[in-house]
Amino acid sequence: MKLLFISLLSFFLLLTNVHLSMAHFGMLIPDEPVISSDNRTVQLDLSFSHPFEGLGMDMLRPAQFYVVKDDTKTDLLHSLRETKIMGHKSWRSDFTIKRPGVYHFVMEPTPYWEPTEDLSIIHYTKVIIPAFGSDYGWDKAVGLVTEIVPLLRPFGNYAGNTFVGKVLVDGKAMAGAEVEVELYNQGQKFTAASDYHITQVIKADSNGIFTFSCPQPGWWGFAALSEADYTLKNPQGEEKGVELGAVLWIYMDPYQ
Image (cartoon, rainbow, N blue to C red):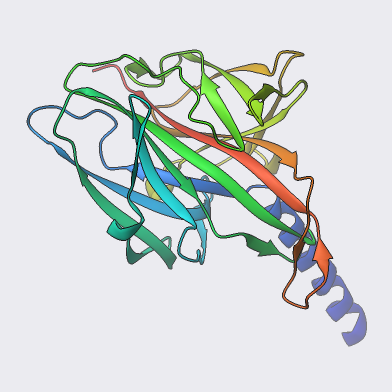
């Protein structure tokens, strides 16, 4: 009987880990979605987490962190300082915006080894922030290995609006891309109706375009997944596959 109980418990934990492994998101969350003259400094939190469930994972120092404005790239890696988000090792940066424009903040993480999926994960993560009334350039790609280019302006939206994005891999549209979607459930305000409701899934069309209507205000993450054409070594030195994620975060405001 004891052996049976241990076996059932191990099976349950395995299922739990499999479920959790399906909802990883690179996270790049600013403290404000829009920069005004009253607040010129934005604080950005960088983490690797399950955003709806509020479950964090330790994240190594990112491989790259930078901002792109008007095709000019500025390295911000030196600005990172270690912090904790959802109880786990994460990173934080403060950036002062001096000129109007649209700022594309980008994080490339150090590869994360996920034993339950037997692969490494790299989520190229970005968030797009407008400053001082400017809105030119929000629909531009910034040249990532894989990225989501917004076709709906990714700021100044209300909850209930439909987000439209295009998935690119090596600069080309990814037909039929699978896109995972989660709300950053800050403060654990919401409970999912079922496990299926935690991470919602969309299939992009033949042009890599997908749509999703965001029912609640807050930060919404979109992660388009693909498989890299190379391998990386796991902690035991074995060559294993690599999951690439194109992650974009957008904010939906409530009606006042």
